[in-house]
Image (cartoon, rainbow over all chains, first blue to last red; front, side, top):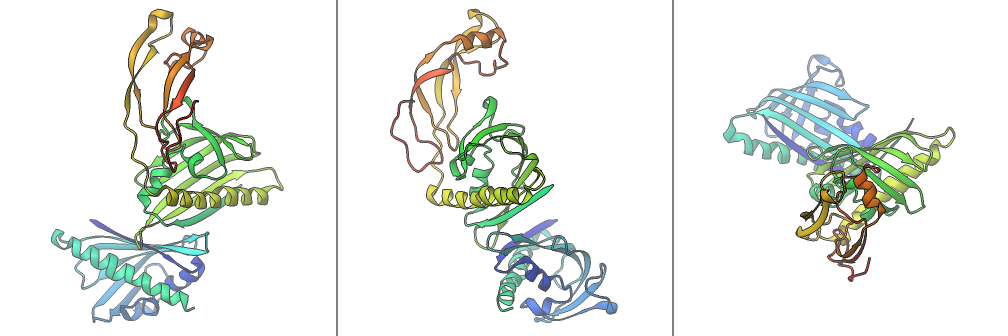
Length: 146
Length: 240
């Protein structure tokens, strides 16, 4: 089991950032790498257990199940059901915390998963940098233009 | 119950911020509202259960006890034991988190406590503003002017007359004693002479529960020897 942790500071109030990221079906609106997304079986995107099915710009398809969603803690977690990444037991959590000084947001995103040992380093880099940090960078621009 | 929550981002890596905050007696070196502070009974400032006794610059006196300390989670929890302020059931938590995007640190400082009815807003502002927010600014400034923490002074060999148990002069032994390196906000004194007083007798008779001090002589004539840890520069040698 390895753990990847990425954190950043978003220059917008936590309420505004959360309004963007709480939509489990909203990845195309704020990440640079998701082309389209839908929730399976017509479920609402904030119903625990719903599955998002999205296509990456590079063509890969990922299915993820919503495990927890807290409007009180600004936190959600989800598990990968299917992906081209070759990971198992993948569970990720995205959490926001208000920064009272400057009315900004501390954003954390971490994941735990299993994979063959020789792929650990490359996957940690890909997920921590290529996914989480890239999404944060994109999120900063999206909320700045709100 | 009042809940106060404040948080900030400090422009320094978590290791540097935590090295200061984990020291329960460091606040007099970086917090603008805190005056003299000491850990009671000579305990280490990272010993869970230790008590810091300090004076605020406005004159209020506070004793606080360290309840929990985690180097793994970068968390410190403490409570007020006594204060000349009308605050009751005060428990506070300091937590740091690493900001991987840039070498920065997220710092959360929270507490819950009770005050007399009608004074809630006043104390929310006092604790949140003059303690927590002022602390964020004070520590950031401390880290900026401090540059790097000064290299720790080595421990030195020293000797003292030590009471090994209660009793008369026969329990006194001349021994090597440990003179550890000063911590943040402390200076090392070179002792020129000590006074032996009635208190040394009272301690050995068991009148005061203070045998842990063990060393003879509570009054001393001394010269500040080395630079203090966590200050800009070494003070000129000064008679203390």
